[in-house]
Image (tube, rainbow over all chains, first blue to last red; front, side):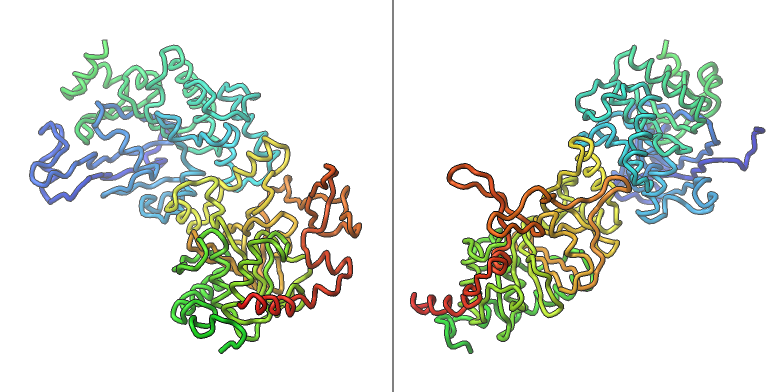
Length: 282
Length: 301
C-alpha cells in the first residue's frame, strides 16, 4: 500500500495536561529551555504541552524521555485514563475520524477503549483484575464487546493465550499465581482480544529481567508483524525503542524536543537532550 | 385513632411521623418510576437496630393504612423470631388486622422469600434487603458502582458469573441471583432463593425493597421484565427438587427446606409455612390473627 498523508489512523493536536491553575504565561515559562515543568508564577505543573502527531495504520511510534517528561501522560490521556486540559484527538475507525474522541461521553469512550484500543501497562495490576482468572480477564474485554457465549469466549481466550505463549491449561488460574513475564503476556492477550487497530504499550518491559524482556519484545514484534496493529510504545529504554519502533518522539519537560525516524535519531541526534540520551546508551 | 393498642396516645399512627412518611413515599414513587434503580432515603431511627429489617419496616409503616391486612414472613415462616417481633411492633403501632393467610393479606413484609401462593394486583410485597448493591461483589468502591449503574457498564458482573461457571461447572449464586430489570438496571432481588426469582418477572404485584442499614430503596412495578443474568449457552436454573419431596405432604412444586430430625435423618419440608398449612388443611391457622390480638391483650399490650 502506497503511503498516503490522509490515511492517518490517529491524529493528535495540541494535547496538553496541566495540574493546578495555570495563567496565560504558564506555557511560555516552562519547558526544556527552562529545565522545569513547574510554572514559577502559578506553581501549576505542566505534565505535557502542545503534543501533536499523526500515527499511520500499522506504524509503531516510540515516545522516549526521562522519567517525569510526560510520556505516560500522553498515552494515558489518549486511553482516557486521564482527563485532558486542552487538545483534541481523532481516531479514523471511529466515525471516520470526524469526531474528537476526547470530547465524547463516557459510554462512547468506553466503547472506543474496548473495541478500538488496547493498553498494556507497566504494572500488570493496572491492566488486569487479580480477582478474576486470566481467562476471566480476557472474557471481560470480550463481554464488553457484546460476546455472550461462554463456549466462544473460552475458545477465543485460549486462542489468544496460545498466541502469546501462555500455557492454556493455566487459563483458569488467577494472574497472581503467574510469573511477571507471564502476567505481562496475559495483559497483552487482554489488550488485543478485540483485534483493536491501535495498541498502547506503557513501559511494558520495565521491571522484567533481561531474558524475559527479550521474549516479551519478540512477542510484541511478532504480533505487530502478523496482526499489523499500530502501536505507541512508551519507554525510557532506547534499546526497546530501537528494536520496536519506526518513528520516535523525544520528550523533555513535557515537550517534544525532537521527532523523526528511529534510525535517524539514534544515528544522528540533533537536539542536545537527544544527544545526551544516545550517548548514555553505550 | 386505634382503640386496641396501648401506644395510641403516645405515638403517631404507624410510629413514623407524617413528614418522614411523606419523604419515604416520595422516594418510593421515584423507585417505582425507575424500576431497579436504587434511591437513597433518610432511613430514620427505629426501635430496632439497622440490619434487622428496618428497611422493610420503614416501607411497611410508610405505606400501611388502617384498612390493610398485614402479614410478615421470615424465610417463609410466619413464626420465626424476626417475623414475630416485627409483627408485634406493626400491630402495636397501627392496630391493623394481622393474618397468616397469604390470600387475605394486602401488605406482606418478607425476609428472603416470596410467598409460594401467587400474589394478586391487590397486594404489595415489601422485602427486607441486607445488601442492595449487586455490584458490590465485583467492585468495592461506591462511587464506581454508581458510575457503573449510570453507564450500564455491567461486564464485570457477567465475568463473575463466568468465573463461577468455570470454577464449579455451574453458576453457584444460590440466593440473591442478580437480575436485569426492565432491560436497564441490574438489581439484587434481596437474598431470595433462585426458585423465587422468576416470580418477579411480569408479576401483577408491586415489589418494594428496603435496605435500612444501607439507606436505599428500590422497586419492581407490576408487569415489568425481570430477567436473571445468563449467557447464551449457560442459563439460569432454579433449584432442582425433582428428587426430593415434602415429608409431610409429598408435595414437590414448592421451595423445600432441608431439615434433619433428631435421629439425623435428612428430610425436606415446604418452606412457606402458610402454604404448608394449606396443603395439610390446617384451617385453624386462618383464625390465628384474632387469637394473636387476644394474646396481646392478655399480656397487657
